[in-house]
Image (cartoon, rainbow, N blue to C red):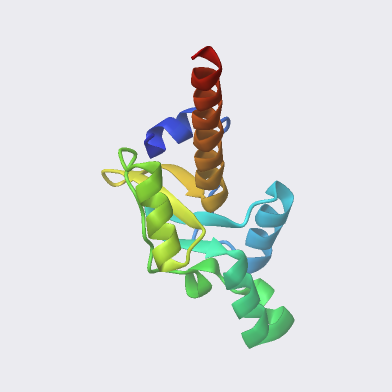
Length: 142
């Protein structure tokens, strides 16, 4: 299965931030939507990712004053991404190797989705359960 197939089952748009948003605004988005990260966009281009980890680093460095900082100054800028044609297993492998939990899905220069490790683990579990059910059915029919 490809990343595009996983995204196809999604409802709603892509939640994102801009470099000019504040950490407080980002925290409100993450908490309000119960998500762990959001891509940071400059127009249509992904320029970073802001995650729970970034919040922790800001607070440790600057305390409560961190909430007024701009996302552009504190976001993660070494962004790894995948294309919609990437296999789910390939994306999961990349996340595991890089110790990251979120990947922007970029087609050309345009953000078309955002996947989490939870999305990919769910896919793997669904596949394993489907394979097990098919095996049980095959054995019972023999």
